[in-house]
Length: 52
Image (cartoon, rainbow, N blue to C red; front, side, top):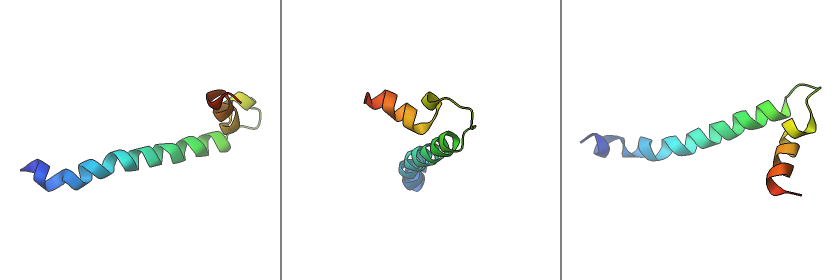
């Protein structure tokens, strides 16, 4: 009975959680401290992940 009632929320919650997490990750990395190394910024993280 509960699955029938809350299936929409169960499908939507992981998507919203991922999107909110990505937004927070971006804000933290882009608005980081001025003295942070390049590896701690978004570009450095992406560069290390992609390998370019």
